Image 1 (tube, rainbow, N blue to C red):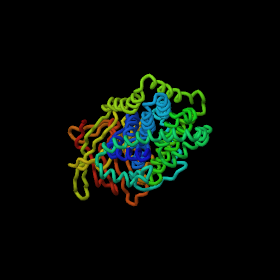
Image 2: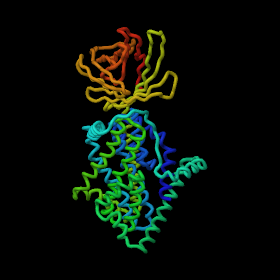
Image 3: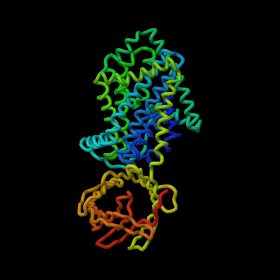
Length: 505
């Protein structure tokens, strides 16, 4: 019942929120907002596996850069701990059991919050995780080809037909969520009775001996069982009633929970491998693994640091003795109020430009227009372009844009604002290019109203093209957009594209 309830909950919440989740993730370039969006989405759909697998696909397909994806993964690690806290709420009618259950349910949350407090600044200022994961991916994994696919498999395939049937009978996702929660809490109450019955016939030492005899054995079983079923939600949530029933102390169960954090990273690797993702997809999977491993290495070997998440969780547990609703307050504050508040506060930091391009083929004498909506973070010039055909409301392509110091990355192509004459190699879609900075124009006038300053002119030539062809690309350092493009063949301009309207929304 417990496993079925969790899978039904994931399935129903995915129906309600996955499409919105993908839209939100694609629109995220502020690392602070990305952190809390990853937390919020995972808390809503009750599955970090879904969030991380979706993020792997988006990185591998080039929709978002790995630097923007890592905060989402960090947030997902915090968001997934909501389930174990909800499980602890099932013991609310037993005062002492409830205290121990809340301590066990919140331990993983505090552990992940502390890791984020350490690693998020390192990633934000120095690109620590993104740089390290890309180095590991490039040295130990080969780049593979193939189109990324968004494909998730449920944890317990045995329940698949039953859930499909329920989806048909009850098409409303919100009703299914309520049904799943009801089954979940019923299973918790039944599980508690089963544990009590077992304790009357068997001593609790048998359970402790098998899973929690020593720290290494506990860590091993946490890692292996979670990797096998690909859900830390289940393994950690099962620990909560065991701690609540005093079968094992939270101190002995802590290594099992830390092992579960390592085991859950297998989902991202499966998403990267089975879908034949590019190296970037493997990089984000490695980043997820490193995030959890580094956290364990920081907090567990050193006794003084090991006590910190333990003490925080136990203090919340003790608080429930005085205020029974403190567990619910923890859930609302950490998983909903803070993320919603910070996302709201950062909503005005995005500059949105509506740009129309005119394209003309000088060989066929044909003309066309297309539109780009550029969403760029005002504070760091990172974001995306959404490209539309003229007259259409659905974007047919999303291109990530990332500007740092004197470099501009458009999709996977790099443009350096340096000295004229400098050249470098770049790659996009498996095709290698040589890009050179040809000259810097003081001004570039495109129309009577559109005049841009400090325009860098780049030449863009395929490395192994049988036809002598190249592009000239005009980019202003002040705006991370392409102002104009000229395609040349045999020294003659055969096609031009340039901005004809440029307005801020």
